Length: 131
Image (tube, rainbow, N blue to C red; front, side, top):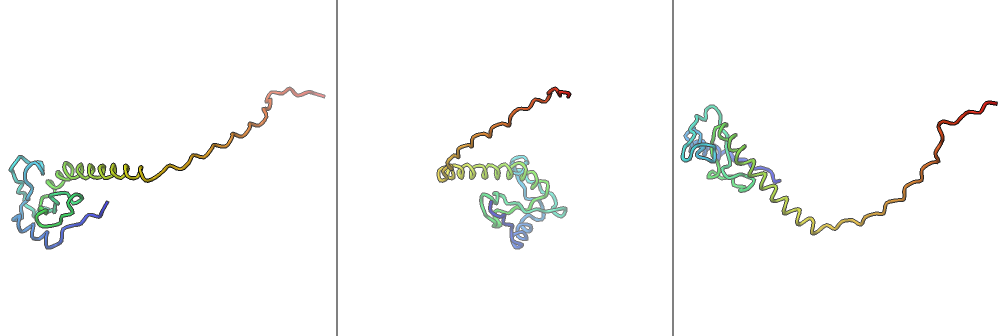
């Protein structure tokens, strides 16, 4: 999987200024009621979220950056981003398997060698003859 790209310092500063130092998480995307914004004070912690998952969009612009509180970011990561990323990876792997199967031929099967013969059986309970 490609390396994740982080937001530039300039983008993070602009997102924080745009937010008014309040969490920008809004609606069901962040586990809130529709149309409701979180508005927690970001002085207690701020994280910069790729609104559209980085793995899918590769968009590190200000429009795709949200200054959110750790609680909202954790909810979105667990309930939106991780399942979406897993689905994206699974779909790409399914496509790869189809292509790989078509290109790679199986090696010819080698014949199994004949089994080695067993050593002769010994009688463990022989009577000793006394002389």
